[in-house]
Amino acid sequence: MWETMYNAKGVGLAAPQIGLPIRLFLVDTSPFADDEDFSPEEQKKLSGFKKAFINAHIEEETGNEWPFNEGCLSIPDIREDIKRKDTITITYLDEEFESHTETHDGLLARVIQHEYDHIEGILFTDKLSPLKKRMLKGRLNNISKGNIIVDYRMRFPNLKKGR
Ligand SMILES: [Zn+2]
Image (tube, rainbow, N blue to C red):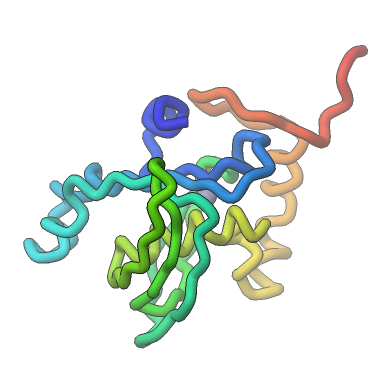
């Protein structure tokens, strides 16, 4: 799964995105560590953050909502500003099945929230206003029909096999 994520140049990947019905997601935010849009303090937090989250549960989301332009490997070419709360407390098992409870904020929290949504069956486009959803409908339909060119392999569960 790590390989799939890096091939697609993602900072996160959830098992349901590759057809695995399990509550697992991966996060590696190190590509953001050189991004000068973030403070040195935030860059430090983002560098080297590489974790697997098994059976994660977000216990609490606090702080002010802030917008960030999100994208998703499952919805190529669509990026939208999504508001999320700043701080989360999450409980999960690591790859050794050790339990952890951690609090994260800023972009790190956001990547985790985005991936967590995947294991809950939620895409970031579900959070858009009804108007925005209508505007994107055609493009989303094309993606679900496989009418899209991407540089990584995608699965299109709605496509009928054979011809
Ligand atoms: Zn995603």
